[in-house]
Image 1 (tube, rainbow, N blue to C red):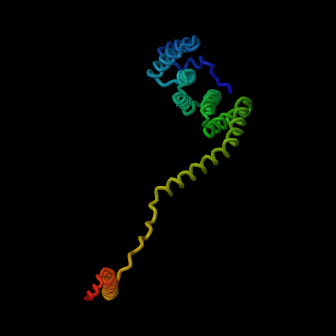
Image 2: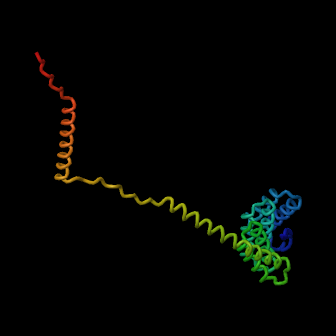
Image 3: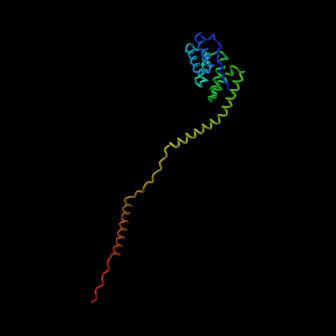
Length: 212
């Protein structure tokens, strides 16, 4: 994917004298690869008065510095403010490429479509749009699968967290008063019988009388 990194030097009539100096300075720094200084110069030009040339060139500079979100915002500023179809197409295309590289395919596709409406003959925009649509189509089944896996995991975790129903404890059978009395009597009877057996076994036999 290419990106329009051409620094704009046109529309000088739109620049104030002070802005023109800062934009030219920024362009020079940009071409030298000194992107920090270039950003500083473009920001200084914009602080004096909003200007689309400085704003567009700032977007390219931020892209070079890998400040993608800020670069997108800068191109958005150009898109919303300009009536020039060529400048708007370039800004939309650049925005689309940045979003495309960030895998924000839905937003990238929208930017490409807007650019293509302004310039239906732009082959580069058309190619990138087709590529983004194809990539999105390939990603959809994977995203759906991930969604299903996530939902399944959430269900399992929820199930673990749910309190388990308490198992009813077996209740001990309670004896009625009458049954208890009968049980005690039976025990007492057994105890008496046992004592009787013991007594009989331990009894000493009578000695026979001596025969004189």
